[in-house]
Amino acid sequence: MTQKIVRSGRVSRRKTLQLLGAAGAASLAGAAGAVAQVAAPAVRRKVKLTYWNWADNPPHQKISLDSVEMFNKSQNLIEVEVDATMAVMESRKKLVVAHAAGSPPDVIMTVQYWVQDYFDNGILHPIEDYFKKWDAASDFFPNVIEQTRSRKGQPIMFVPQTSIPYYVFGRADWLKEANVAVPDTFDQFVAAAKAITKAPDRYGIAMRGQTYSAIQVILPIWASAGAKFVDDKGNVDFDSPAAIDVTEKWVGMFTKDKSAQPSAVNDGYREQYALMEKSKCGFWFYGPHASPAMMKALGDAIQPMANPRVGKERYMLANPEGPMMTTGCKEKEAAWEFIKFISSGDALMLYTAGRAVPPVRKSASANPVFQDNRFIKFGLDEVATWWTPPYENKNWANFQDKIPPYWQEVLREKITPKQFNEQGAKFLRGQA
Image (cartoon, rainbow, N blue to C red; front, top):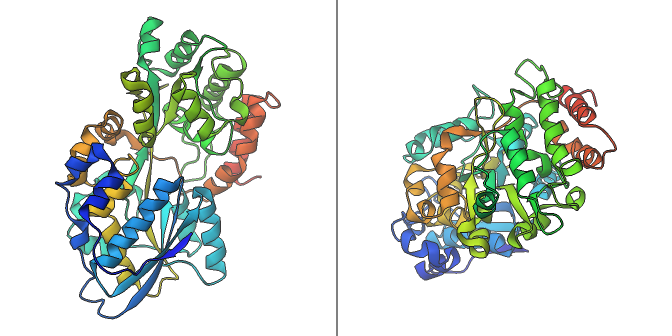
């Protein structure tokens, strides 16, 4: 729903702690108090703002609503209305349409892979000038702030609240049972997936066929094989022998080794989640936001494991997320106050601890609520390897939008892995 929140009073600390859950409640006591923040002295009149965020589930929607409530109750000059009804991919389409119609929100949550496209199309208002004057600027991980520039030499585009790393959720008990070590290389991973498969009761990997997210988790493996995808000069190597070899081995787990579940072609996140929770699959590439449920269901049997590598370098896909200001915002000082608020203190804890994802501020990352979750800690310990593909390239959105159906086709063996990579290369070159 779209909710207008203007009630008086303050959000109780108990309510905030209840949302984060018992695991994080005690440690939140040491976090900075976001509810104490107020509007900047420059904002000395009544102002109304609109804020959009997606919601993967009801608790995620509640985070958006509660953070806005916290902000509105912290001062009496800036009033924010929130819409948190859309799915993550729908939010991009909705923003583009609203911008074209001249009625965009003032602030919207964004993910790194949309940022350059928004900027190039005049939708995003960079926040570099505001950020550099913020006394909290030095508290952010420098490599993540550089990522938010999207392209070297560009201004900071948005304030990251989190950067969600993707790696392997692995059944340590099944590996031990099969006398197989935690895989280091991609070849070892393929072999391990086959070794722990006991069809039809269980399979080595929970594979995905639906949406672009199906191949997103393979990006770090392609990169480790040396693929640049597309460089600054527009040179594309997604159809290189090394990139094709990775695709062949990944697809082969489904078509040849039968170490992926038979329903993989049509499966998405929900199906993968259920397969892991019900002990039907042993490996799953996902982010730490799945960790509370996985640990509850599987205990110590499920452990974080590094992404397998092909070459010497190992990469961990980590997409920064956070609020951005739109060019259509007429009250930018007020919007900046809201952005700072939801990127700090208790409000930040809602968006990070409340979703079981790591913050990208040094002070917050040291909080026990993150350090005591082995999956979040694993991601934070590997922050130096956090990586994103060339989202800034003018053809990346073209690739991302058009490649999903071809992934299902290669899993169905309607096209070969080589043809899949060649088609992706065409999209990256802007030839299709």
